[in-house]
Amino acid sequence: MSTIAQTLNQIQELQSEIKKSGVESWFVRELMNFTSVVFFQYLSHVVLEESKERLGSLSQKAAKYYELAGQPELFDEFTRFSNMGQFTCIWNAYEKYLRQKYLVDYGSTKNKLINELFLDLIRRAEPLGSEKMKEEFEVMRSTRNSLHDGGVVRKSNSPCSGKFFGAAYRFYPGEPVTPLRVVEVAFVMWRHYQAFEAVSNP
Image 1 (cartoon, rainbow, N blue to C red):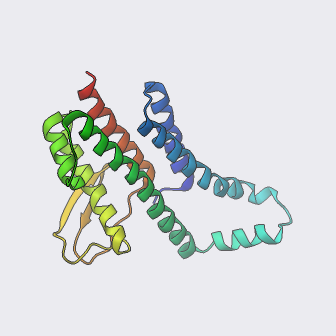
Image 2 (tube, rainbow, N blue to C red):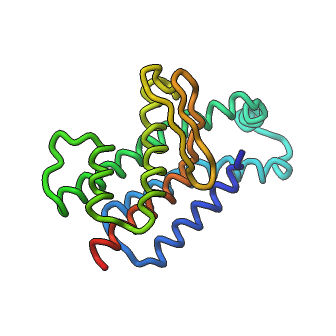
Image 3 (spheres, one colour):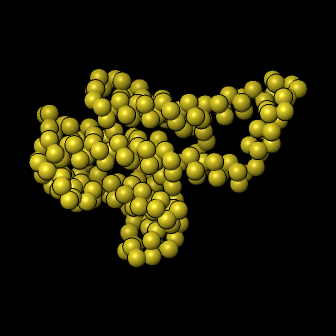
């Protein structure tokens, strides 16, 4: 399991890559804003952990923080709830980008489910790495869908699996889903954006 410090380092890596690209669009701004908020949310935990030895006598609230932070189950729940909310936010921006991209390049998106729209967008645009993109999209979509049932795959769903950011994920009916790390989600969405835009603006 990744540490918060590793997540902060990855966020800085992604933001540096985006800045170097010089690309500007509302979706890129959303990625930057999103990762900045996640960075800010987690930064206080790193600062407090680094300051623990130097604080000496602790205030009542600081003492309570360290007490709670030492409870693995609480930290796991904090991470799970944060991850679910963060993933939902960035997924909404990603889906909006895909729908706008499809509308501008190929026409109406009316009555198209997002998975149908994505596959049609891939088929029409033929971006580099399209098979990998389809697999990554399906992992993200299956994860998003599981959030409707508290992170568990619906019993009516068909089993599926796929790779995402070098790790294998499986989705079996009635089983809990392994959460995606939101910084990896942001990286993948950035890659998808680059692939689609490269086709539109060769």
